[in-house]
Length: 406
Ligand SMILES: [Fe+2]
Ligand SMILES: [Fe+2]
Image 1 (spheres, rainbow, N blue to C red):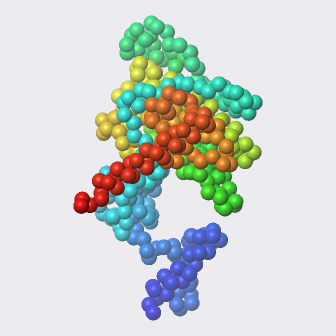
Image 2: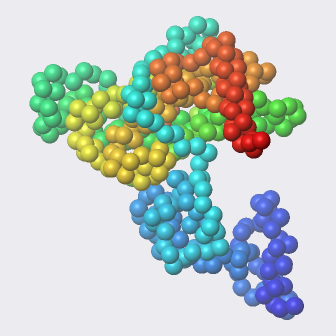
Image 3: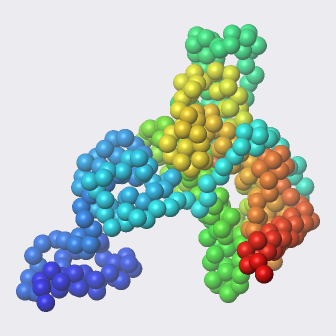
């Protein structure tokens, strides 16, 4: 047996240990002669060296990583979240070259009419837990507004009449706090999105563990919740391609995530209904914020973003036209937030232990999601019945079409 084969087999035998996290990925591998020759990466022989694309979004980090000949598995796979296929370097094709597919669970696609259908709507709190959930969101919003300098003040009519407003007028409004600058918007959005990606993952994780623990079906909730978490993460990654967060922003994200993840985890354990209601209320505020942002961009009040091209990650994820602008992206993000608002308020109305997820088989239309804050439990039941009936009819008609003629 050759030395290299022996080394590979030794390395192979150690893989389960690495999988358990008991050893670092780089370790000494003893060859056939019994001497430790050098430090060697276990998978070194399996993966060709690649000057592969980095997943980092910060240009400095990205360039540094790309300059290193690191081993990258599957870097050529197409995916809206990963390297864009156009960035592919033909010199680095490896075995996974034929592996194509999305790295994301879904790609929301909207028509113009669906984007226009989004409205700022709010569910009035009814029960005591609703009031606590709404009160918590309002309190968080005030704190958040204070830290990010956000003020929902009306823009003077004289400035709007300038059409487009002059740079001097915009700077004066920014100085007195009436307008947010592009950088202030990005700070606010990045903080918001880094928090917004937590609830779906917590809910999905806890329901997954419950299903394993109790040996019960989940009823289709997990997938929807994980999709939501992923969708929020895509929002964050999209805006991260525009902003280069400072160490201060990163520290804020770290602190906010540490506190919020644990607080939401405990809330979901104690009362998942309240947790979904809280997210529904939080998403109401997200729709409100993005609506404000869209109005500002449309009126030329954020001149840095006027006609700014959409990041390629967003074009890929939302399947936008190549000529899409950042404004198109923000409108798509707002439609996503309206979906989260609708889904979470609807889920909060359900029996958390026994009800199935009404959106497991199909989503409500984008118009409904954009204009209604949620379904009542009865509406959810009716929607699930309708979806099932429609799917059965579709299946029957496709069977008829596919059956051979006699
Ligand atoms: Fe979001
Ligand atoms: Fe959201």
